[in-house]
Length: 225
Image (cartoon, rainbow, N blue to C red; front, side, top):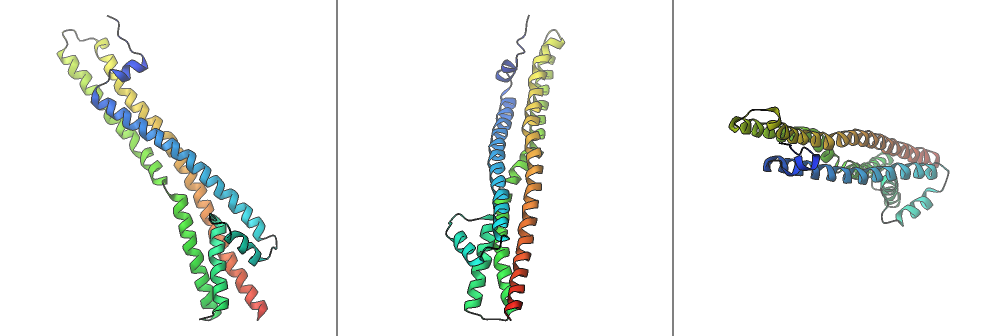
């Protein structure tokens, strides 16, 4: 008796538990790939915007004009948003001074740090999902595999003739669950590591800009004095 061991038949003829495991893994894989594309675009835009802003900032342009241009953009984020938060507070401090200059710098820096924290939350958002998919998918797939193999050996104990062909389809369908788990996990882990590295680099770039901008304001104040 021939047994259909095609990939599709192994999936359709799998037990209910194994089918549920496969469905969960396929949905997790689809969700992770969707997120990978979204984060790749988001982080790519953030890196390009940061480079573009730094070019404009250090080109010698008037900071007030730069601020006016940035503030007209309601969707300004990244380094633009951090600069806008700091310069807005700077203008407020010089117009209504309420403390020493060092105190003003501290307030300006705090405003920029708050904006930086918001940007970090945006960049890191949903990365935990990729980490979760990468770490749990192999175990979910392994659960489906163990369950399928258990069913195969249970069926073997009830069979009149114990042959490899009697359990091969069940074991094959069970191993597919592990394969799907790895298919979901590997891209998620690779993407998570790559995006985490990119985000860390952007955070460092943002953090350096905050320090450089505050130092620039301090030098400007010393020259004015």
